Image: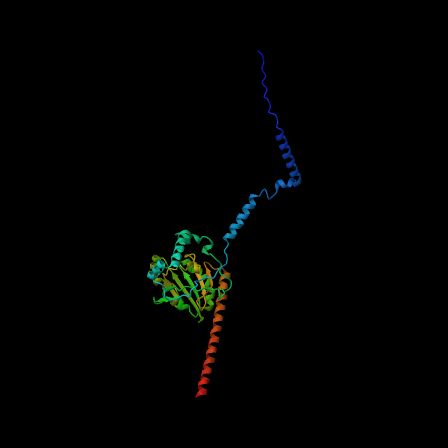
Length: 324
């Protein structure tokens, strides 16, 4: 039998393919010779995973850091003792377009951003502290008003308003809700009260704010135990309130019901300083200094007014004597 040899015919190399391959090789060689061997291991091309991780940690740590209070706290309208009734509020919401928009915005915010355990979970981060108290007083021309809060006095159960109690005095208003909030407030106020508690122009108000209906009932049932724990001299300045502050929460920075809040209010009901949660030594010191400044200024104003009044009285007496 004849042997048959099968040979595979190779496809001829196209001239265009050969030319393109040669040109590509020349371009690669020229670019490599210009860039040098260091360009293959450049930091801009090959990023280290450790550097990305370090940047992410730095960013997360900076986001977790507490920041100072960045805005004045309070409401823009001067508070009044008379509040809207539920019927008046309902009528305003149904007829006023601005009130409807405000109500819609408030409901959406509450539904989206705040769950049932929001306040409790927020205490895991910085103990519920959301901002650092300012080191100095908020300027008077930029400060806002503290809203009127109505509550029952621990002394006799009479209805009292913060607006009437704080007008004309330097007031330290403390909002309480839980036992831990009392510890928070004490960390701010202990040095200040030791120095100014007996001053005639200084006011110290504690407001046990229970917006929840069930908790409000429980607190009212245990008023006798509250009277035993609170010093008797503080009973007239301790209010138990069930007022709903849902529309003033953002304005006064009341972000967490589980922590305590402290507000320094001047004689014109303007919030000049504020602190929240557990106080640092610097915050407690700054509160004492700010109270001292406001008290000294008010004393100076009172003396100037008294001197002016005496001067006017003397002039009137001289006029009446000259006429007679």
